[in-house]
Length: 404
Image 1 (tube, rainbow, N blue to C red):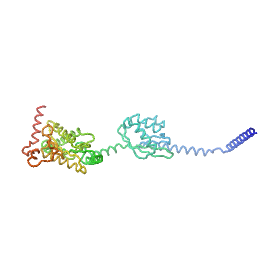
Image 2 (cartoon, helix red, strand yellow; image 1 turned 180 degrees about the vertical axis):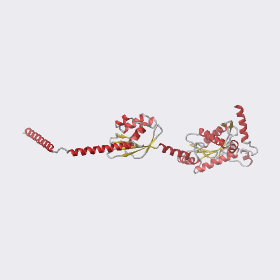
Image 3 (cartoon, rainbow, N blue to C red; image 1 turned 30 degrees about the horizontal axis):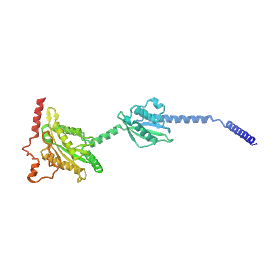
Image 4 (cartoon, rainbow, N blue to C red; image 1 turned 180 degrees about the horizontal axis):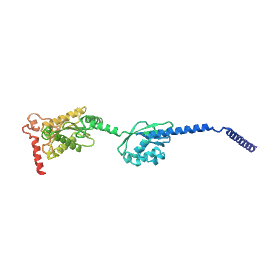
């Protein structure tokens, strides 16, 4: 009986289903056909929307900003002419309605981005994450052709995205040039005093925070006024540039070189103790003394005096360190020039010749007194005893002409 009952139930259910299906078909047959006016109205509405969309696309093709419209699946439904040109996107790629990742990969394979090959995958992943997240922050992209694009993403209704690209090359380059002018000495191409002080403050903070040594060289061209008087200010400027180039060639990447004004320079040496700073200063002094400037038929030899100081406990900031190095420079000038002096030790005296500096044995000993002190101190030549630098220059010029 159970099997018979189940069979009867299934038959009844099928009969009910067939009846309902028949009723639905009858009702559909009784539904009135759409009126011609309704069809025409619908056709006109679709035509109007299509015209508005075509007008919008045409307008976007006239703007200089790049525009890409993505659907919720991140497929590019529209790319205007400007963005195609920016990224060298071929028509076949655009017409295929590519995904954003496909656009990024095409730009990568065509070397569009100014990104090292080893960093391309990371760069693409970062760009994709920004757009997927709908990040509206502006981001600058540098292209291999030198252009700089400012990109911004906006979330559209329905989950799509609009990505815009604006060419800001001139704006960025102008800002960079203004920054360069504000930080670089126009004559020598090294840092100016203002920027040096800013960088020196940062180096000081790092030195204090990590308990690392920090030293400073203050340099000044000897008898610079005589060079200007004898050869003119144009040649004097060339001597300044010549010294800057020599100093630039001897510095490390972490060192900070600047022209403080006139013929005075500073070289900040992070992670450098006083002994190493002295060696660097002495090498630079020798480079200047043995590397004359050739100006036409003139061979212009010059020398520098250098004061060296290292950060110690009594220095509380960069101005203290600069004052100590400046005092050492003053001592070097008074001691006869063309020499290196350490402020916190007895003077380290460089011979006016090309030899190595002669350092007193008692450099770190307490200062002597009376006649004993006088025996250890260098004798400062009187002005009448000092050979005028112009005589040296003219003698060297004569020898130079004979050789050439």
